[in-house]
Length: 482
Image 1 (tube, rainbow, N blue to C red):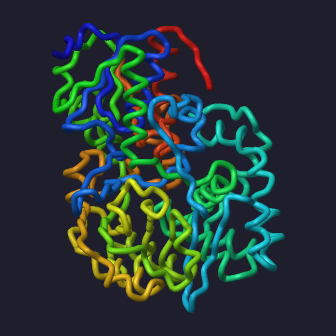
Image 2 (cartoon, rainbow, N blue to C red):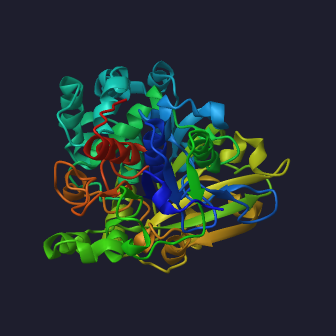
C-alpha cells in the first residue's frame, strides 16, 4: 500500500523520462520522493508494447536515442547496471534518394568522410571541432539558462545554429545529397526549414551521430524507463500508478511538487493559485504540429532498393531538401502533404528480441497539423514503397495512432505534439515563459520539469535534472552539478 503523500520530502507528478530523472536526482541527494503516474504503467514516451501481433514489440513513441546517449545526466548514471543495454546499428542513419541512391552516415567520422566525395571537406569543416568538443558542448546545450561553462565551443555552435537549415545547407554543402541529409536531421525540429535556428537541430543530431551514436534500447525503449525506476526504487523512491492529479488540493502544500506536465495541464491543476498574467501566459503557450504513426509487423526485412539501407537503424524518408522543406512547410500551414517527411526505425534488424524469428517490426511516423484525425497510412506506405519496392507485400498487420489517439495515450501530447510545445525561437529561450529560472512556478514550492522547459523535447532527462537542481538549491540549500 502506498505511503501518504505527506510522508515524502518531494512529489513528482508524471513518470516520463524527465519526471523519473528529476525523482532520481532528488533521491540521490537524500530526499524521500514519490512519483505519481496517471497511467497504468510508467515511462511516458518510453514505453514498448505488442501493438500488432503477439511477439512483435513496438516502441509506442520514442524509438532511437541519440539524446539519451548524449545526455550529460543519463550518461552519468551507469544505467547498464539497472537493465539498460544500448545496441548500435551498423549505420546510425541513412537518407534514401531516388534511383537507388542513399546517403549513409557511419558512426566513424573518417569512414563517413570517405563516402562523401567532394562534400567531405565541407562536412569536416562544419562538424569536426564540435564533435571533438561534444563532452563540453553538451553540458551547455542541455543545460539551463545560465552563463555557459564553455563559451568558445558554444559560440561556434551558436553561430552556425542560428541560421535556418535551408541557408546553412545551401551555403555549406555543394551536393544535393548532403543538403537532403541535413534537411532530414533538421526536420526533427518539426519546424519549417526556412525558420531561423532550425540549423541547430540538424547540428545537434549530426554531431551526435559521430560523438555518441544513435542507439536503440535492447528489448525496447521501456528499458530506459525500467532502468530509471530500478535505480529510483533502490534509492528508496516510490512510484504510484493509476492516479491522475486533477487539482492541486489533492497534494500536500508543505513539500515541493514537480510537474512532468505541459503548461496547459499545469494551469488546469494549479492555475487558480497563479496571478492572472502568469496564468494567461500558460494559456498562450503554443503547441506544435502533431504526429501520425504506424507500427508494422512484417514478414521479412524491408526490401530496400539500396541494400545498405537495411544496415541503418534510422532512415529519413522524403527525398530531396526541397521535398522535405515543402512537406514541413505544408504541415505548418495546416495541410497534409501527399509526400510527407517520414521518420523510420527498423529496430528488429539489430535486436532479434523485437519480433518472432524471421519476422520484423517497422516504426514510422510523419508530421501532421495539430489535432489532425486524417489517416496518413497510404501516404507513409507510398513513401516507403518509393525507396523499397515490394514493401507493402511484406506487411502482416499494422497499428496506427493519430494525434487524438496520441493525446489519449499520453496527456502531455497536446494535439499530438510530442515535443511538449512548439520549438520556435521564442519557446526555446522562453520555455514555458521567459525567466531566468524557467522551472520555478510562481506559487509556493511548485516546479515544472517536463519537455516544456529547456532544453526541450527528446529522451535526455535534462529538463528533469535542471528542475531538480533548482529544487535542491531553492528549497534545501543543496548545490549540485554534473
